[in-house]
Each structure stands twice: as structure tokens, then as C-alpha cells.
Length: 114
Image 1 (cartoon, rainbow, N blue to C red):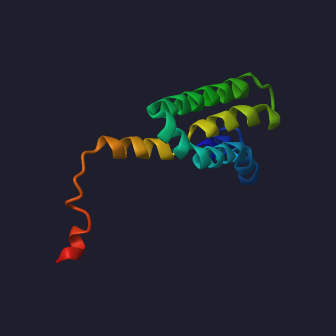
Image 2 (cartoon, one colour):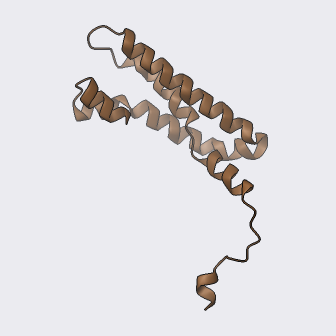
Image 3 (cartoon, rainbow, N blue to C red):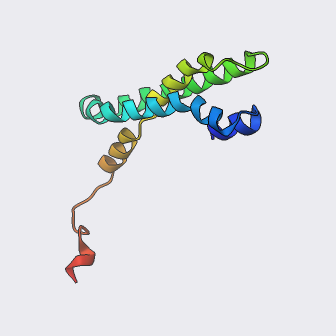
């Protein structure tokens, strides 16, 4: 969605738009490496802190883009997008959902038992 906003809303070229959202992708990749261990250690608070970081990073990005006159420099949104990406890790949400589901294992491999 961010890449489309940069292209359609701000008139960036596809290459520039992709390079602009690279800090977000790097943040997601880095946080995905460590998030699983953090969730095992600290529980759902990691998810809450991550989602808070994502919201704050996206708000900061929006404020920078709103207040920038003309063509905002790319370095101005690198930090906020990196913070947003660091908070947007996929592992904790999946683990939290998996832990919340009561499962006795009876359905495991049921298709193959026939």
C-alpha cells in the first residue's frame, strides 16, 4: 500500500517508490529474525510493543510527508519507515493465535489415515 501511495499519490516512479519502502522491508526482515525468541521470552507484550512501534512509525512517516514542502528527501522518511517495519513482525501474531486455539491433535494427518 505504501508503494502505491508513493506512486499514485506522490508521483514517484516505480523504482523510486520501491526504494523508498525498502527501510520498511528491512525492518520487517530484521524483526522477524528475533521476534520468535522475544515472544517466547516475554509473551504477548512483544506483539503489543511491535504494533505500537508500527503505528508510531507510520504516523511519523505521515507527518514528515505532510510537512515536507515540494519533494521530500528520502532520508527524511527512512527512520520512521524503519521503526514501522521493525514493529511489523509476523511471528508473534501467529504464535499468539496458535497458543489461543485449543487443539488435541486428533485432526493431525486425518486425510492421510484413509
